[in-house]
Image (tube, rainbow, N blue to C red; front, side, top):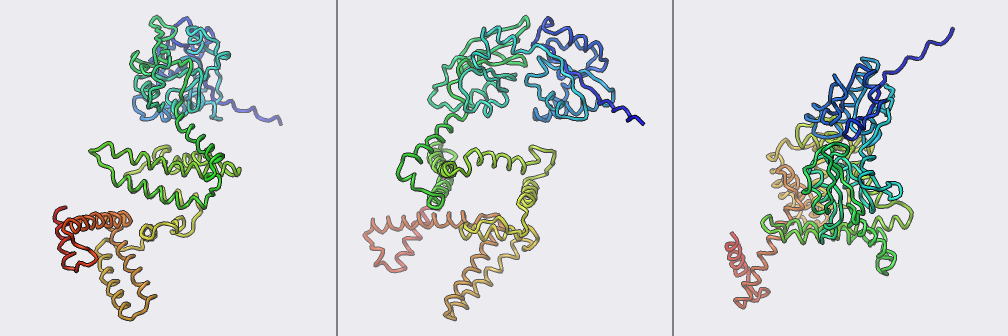
Length: 490
């Protein structure tokens, strides 16, 4: 018997409505629109949308969705559903189906439908004509305005930026270049408006004025003849500096991953100190944090540079790894998971983490090199996640008295090892109380120690003013000075 004929897949015929003028729409496109009765428009906000009579638009999706990726996904899904229902539909998009059309990319990746693309004139063709350039000879790079901060990183030379449909998009593009000295401000730029329509405008301006030179809309694009500084240019120079130092500085050359550990820890604590010193009412306190974050970042670059020279991994592997991990662990942002509150976010994070790491113990992943208080806090927190915990702080507090009594009993027994163990149990009980109260014990003890240090320094100042030698002073004298300092700070 002959094989049954293969079932034909539903078809989506994608046509382009050109850059804006009716005269730019091809005869083939018009013929397809007339031939296929079931018609859809990505958006009716386009000068030639009237050439697709009776079409359903997806403007409602743009108005409802909070992210463009959600818009593209829903449009593609609805088109596939419509094609399955009718057998064949026509889908009209602004410009050309092959230029920056995410919905078309999604359709082409869907094996359940056949996608036929009808060639069309895009805004690019008009742009090259108005700019008077050959994009191949000039070497123009085309970038989506919504992705400029990442897509243009490291770029230089001629760049054409599409999807600059609002002044806030142009502002984001401008601000994505970190240029504290204003070296990019006078960089020439051309804003292209409504190409191919009677309202066409070509506005020559500078980088500092791109978001103030026009009222941008969906027919606006940006041309930069010579991009001098791309986004992340500063980081690229910093990365290169780390490699130069590793190759030319005798101290840097000798370092290894292990030898740098003390510096990594030291820089981390200096960041913590800078954060503790932040004053919301004094912006100058940011300077210390900026410096310390830079020192910490250099440690990361240093380790990546060592690994790069050893042929093991690069900073690109580091950034790609953390990027992909954060995307995976935020399905409520990048997927279709709904969460009610931060606690549910944390629970999802832990569940995804366990699945990724194939962990068997609740304590897997807790770093043994953490400071002791933080280590105890993390261990208790992990045990609590499987229900091994007091219901509330009222159950944890009595353990402090119990462990204190055991410390005193051990002290009476003159057994150093037993005293050591009981003091550890007492500290562990205090950490448990802190955890139940939502207090991070490491920072709490650090703050208490810092407070003691400042007050005792006050005692030292008072003693010096009164010519009291602290080493010879008795305890009542010291207590009196302490109480005086304490009262002056309350």
